[in-house]
Length: 147
Picture 1: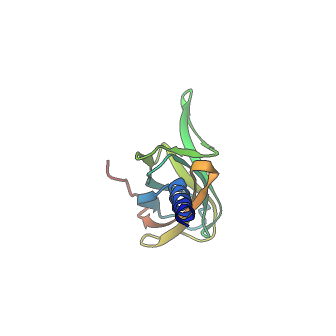
Picture 2: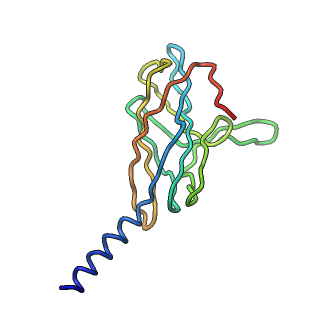
Picture 3: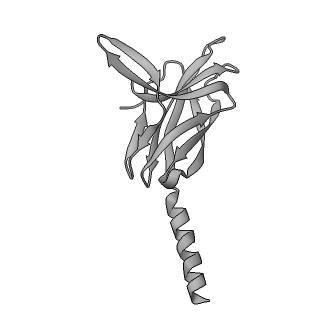
């Protein structure tokens, strides 16, 4: 009986360790103008264990993707990436001019003071996935984050 309990306790500890604790802070998105169909979302993400951000979903847009801005020659270009590495214990900043979340096919104008729900899909050890719910604050169109 003792061996069974020990095995059960070990499996519970192992399975909970496989899912990293992921926290999100300072999530924001700029307000949009009428008819605007895309916007970028920005935030800080920290994982307690090695993980990667593999997908993003939102009911506010037809599609959400993880993107990166990069200089190619003399031109800044944006492109989708399959995932974003979240090193254990390190904060990863999604910011203008770097990694960020792009929302395409916005279903309505994003107005200052509103919030946009996002679901971040994070993959940890043994390809275990977890979903992190984030409420993203809509900031003024001219908003600049603090440095």
